[in-house]
Length: 136
Image (cartoon, rainbow, N blue to C red; front, side, top):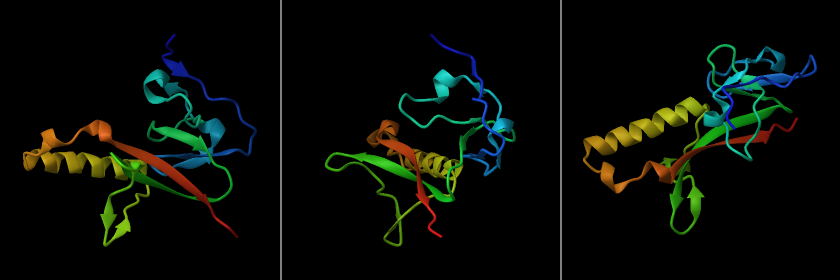
């Protein structure tokens, strides 16, 4: 069974949501129905509040104040999925999913220019979202 849209779940008035892509924040009830959910949602992943009313990307319910970041992870033979991208010896994290996606696109464009594209598979890369609660 496939659906062309998935309506947001009605929330109480004060439930906040945030976009993964454009940094929109607002009320979860302001989110739009999710278009093509079977193409955009994975079983077992966090259920979004709906589509961002500004950019159309997925927006999620905000919990306690958190720091959110994204990693580009590589599937390695020995350690499985890990963040091997680094800057000055420190793991490279991105503030938005779009930033991580743009870096991955640029990586594969560079591989194409260097004629090394056939040595790497896009299936060995993924973008993962992390949130850490801000302690006050």
